[in-house]
Image (cartoon, rainbow, N blue to C red):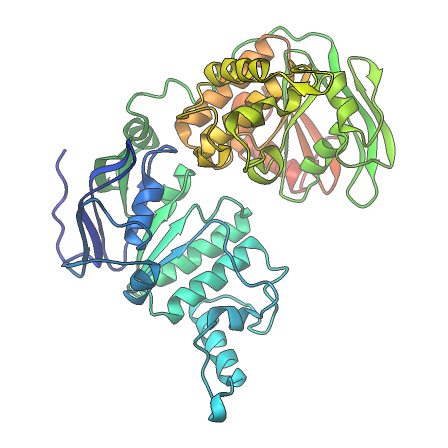
Length: 506
């Protein structure tokens, strides 16, 4: 497959760009063209080189080989400020605004219009910000403090800031990972309006349905190398997945039959005032139970309460028939519970620690005597689980923060699987990881169920719930609205219960 030779001239392009970090070749002769009025997707697994490519376009990294072209002319960005001045803006998954400043002050930080004697013209700043929001078609108050804004609104502030710099190229790195469905729809509307104004948009997302909904062309990277650039029209998800992983993905949801055993987790009338009410369900050994519902329905809060992170006000939790005290994670662990949290970076890992130490955190008692850590036992435990879960790393002593998102997720799973749990609670197990790693995580969950582990899986990814769960519990406004077995669980039935349209009491 040859590189396309489009006409007219792209606004921003890479030609034959390579970048290495020590012995690791992050990019190998990659070319990319971004055109005015087009949304262009960048696809690839974790570690494929997407982040390095973005940083080359944004002036963070200078290529070792190859050329960056602006309007067809070679250009060298000596830093992000050079790229910004050339009209290149990056919108990250988690924006970094000054929380105690207003929205308008964040947008015009360091370049506010001035009045006489150098005083800031606050009226002009407010008017300019309001005009930017009108262009974007969003309703935000320029004088509102940035503190307390949702991630979606923070991203819109960053987009407005980019427009204030007359950005011609907008790079969006996983912008929808933390957004609700309505927030995604609003963001897509903004992106389409930017395209109509002539901006070039580079869109990165692991959600393939978003690529097909928003973009006109897609470039695929694999292992740092360019694989293909092609129109989205006429391309199927299977075709794109095959380019990303280099093989046919046999099955994204490899659900294996498992023998269902005794009740491993029993939750009865669990209530936390103002959060969830009268929640009851059971999970049996060998069973994967999906917990579905809209954002804010109380799914993660139930999991945190069951594990003891949050106290509950009423109800009972039993593990293998034995009652569990509320608000005591250490007792939950001792009883055989494990919780893989939704936010792996903030709650699942200690980013300043090594891969080895993170895996060993749940086994401190098992690998120490008289309070002294046995480093050999810790390393053996870490190696064993890193191999079992096929974690890709250079050295176990490297900081866990150096790993890709998918490999970080595997480390969190390794940490908890090393405890040999009776019940595994996984909250958004595949959020933000590539399709190949997603299939591996699904296969692992299916294997664990086959070994008799009871799995409670919380997910906002409805196909994941339908593809992996033996039963589906649907929450609506803090209550279990429906319990559906695998045969009757469909997108329609789950969404109807999640939105309160219909429901069958569990």
